[in-house]
Structure formats: structure tokens, C-alpha cells
Image (cartoon, rainbow, N blue to C red):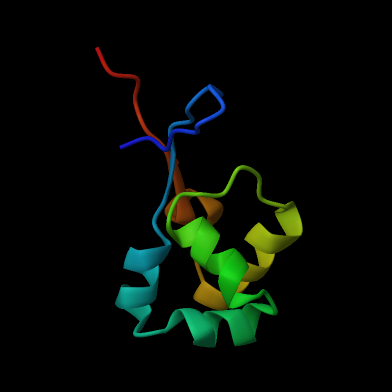
Length: 81
């Protein structure tokens, strides 16, 4: 599943596994927001694969709060075919 835009921009193949990581750690999005110092709205955009860009500082804060690596948080899916 790749996000699409209504502006005809190229779809990306990056998938965020934030939902799974939160579940694995028994943590809510609000708790992660508090621990990482990032707004719930911004984390929700990331979690729902609607992010168009992510700052390294955001990735670092999320990974630190979850005790994970960027590779566990984000994945580039294969091209179809």
C-alpha cells in the first residue's frame, strides 16, 4: 500500500511500523509524544504513512523513546513486478 497524492506527485514506498512498535511496547501515541517531545499530530502523520518528510531529530527522538533503530521504524518496500 503506497500513499498517493491528488497533485500527481510520485508515490513513495516507505512504510512506518510505529503502530507495531507501540503495541509491542505497550505504549500509547500520547505517551510516545510526551517521551519524545513531539506532538501527537506529527506522530499520527508518521504512524499513518502520511509523512512527506521526517527530520533526523524527529527520527532520533522517536527511536530513543521506543528503544529501536530507524530500520525497525521505517522500511522501504519492494517495487511491484
